[in-house]
Image (cartoon, rainbow, N blue to C red; front, side, top):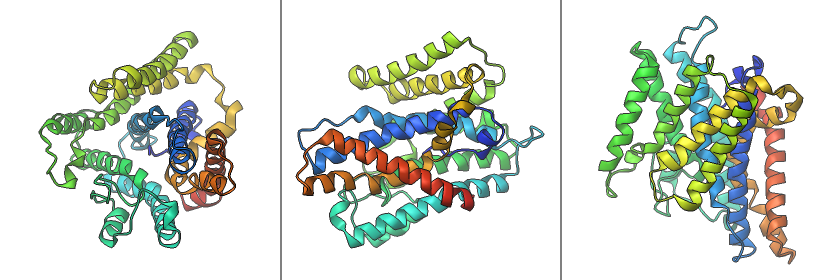
Length: 338
């Protein structure tokens, strides 16, 4: 989920953050690929749950990117209507396409989609990102990974409100997100689906905003930059393994913020233009995130029919199929749409 800003590539700034977007999306792809192999090929196979924390990195990146995208070349904040329209154009076409493809697969080959069912009221709410319970009791749209867009669009709405009120986004948005996060302690299990927004995970957008606020003045040596990046990843993985009982803002939010911060201060030390393919895949990461649940399950299904019970090979095939599709779709569909 995090949504990219074309400015990150066109201006040549923060290309490392683009690369990080691919890393975060790929973490989610691997997590789901291990899950698909476990469900469809080998029940004894291990599921790498830690990779799901790529979503947290995405949210921090989103907070960072939106601050950059919401400023004009003169440094002033953009018009709120323009801001919202650009966000809609950026996320809706690919999301609607992925949702429609998911719906088509569900109708044509329901056995391939284990975590969705056909309920037309849910389908309608899914297209417009209205929170709703699915058949598994989770608050998710038809395209399961679209749950992150609930929070993305909520963040956009708060940011646009700040622009409309001519309030300082660096004060108004963090204040609202903090209130929402604190209010999450009041949320009960019987509350309506719209209460999904009461979640401390929204603070991750605030972390990204703060990094963007200080980005131009932050400086660190190459060694320190690498230490911050590696320390962030180590904390993210270790927290999942040993401290998952602690609040998510500590085990997921802060480590993710450290990773993004590390890539920001690493920018001057790396000639990212030497890694154009990774920058391109970073730009394609939104497509990768949205479409991989529709493509990756095919690998274990085909291998099972061929009696090839090799879950690691299944994960490899799922990842390759997903990345290849996202690259082609981004180049020949998403870029022209944008």
